[in-house]
Length: 54
Image (tube, rainbow, N blue to C red; front, side, top):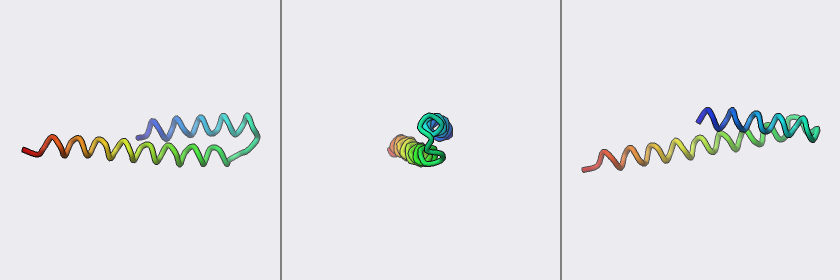
């Protein structure tokens, strides 16, 4: 979860510096990273709860 947020932060920062859109792309990519982290968290919880059922 943290990796996706940090990775998206750096991608957004790089693209902002490249296109001069500070901080629009960084904020957009951080939001996408947070969403990706929650999706992965949900998948892990779903897998763990499936393993506990008899």
